View 1 (cartoon, rainbow, N blue to C red):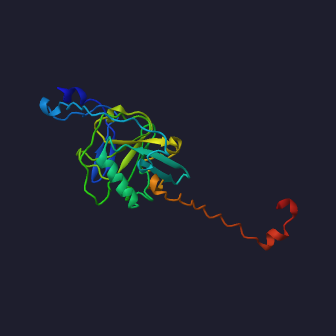
View 2: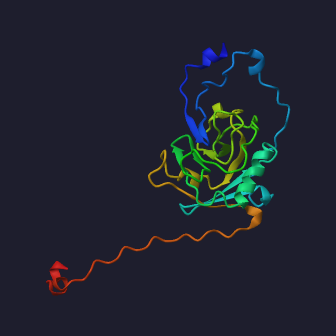
View 3: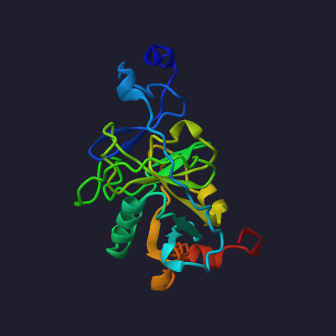
Length: 239
């Protein structure tokens, strides 16, 4: 059976509200049911437009993430691929939901995950979970996809950005966009589960809304050492 053949591979997980979200980097457990009729994939005859990498075109579908590392990332939201998920991203973005959230799970060579206001991987928005919109678009470098729990219809607010291709995630997680500008900034997101010094989304916005770029606050300078009478009277060679 398919289940037996695939059961030997190791798995990796994404965390998403309210429980652990499974996103294996192998093909393990792709099929849990032994029912051939239940596991047969339906033929998908839809067509999908390619990603437009020009961030000046259709700016209502360009998602802008200003990060705490001082960089700005632009993502093309592909409404044709996953209309309900794109609508959710736009709604939460315009509500300010993503402003200030950390990248709480960042695995080198795999992906960077964020979208949980609690920073634990267990949180989400107050909106209802989304029904899956799996599609045949591949998880290539720069893919933006929704995290979920074991239930296929449990995506809510958390998402991840793929560093390198992970085709084992295809048709199991809803692929809804692609980084079209400054993937290098995504590569620079601090690693860890969670990172010791996590990178934050300072501000998320839709390009057509023309939100000004957030002002980066410089860290306060350390105070100078106190000047003592002994220091003032010390020989020049000791100063």
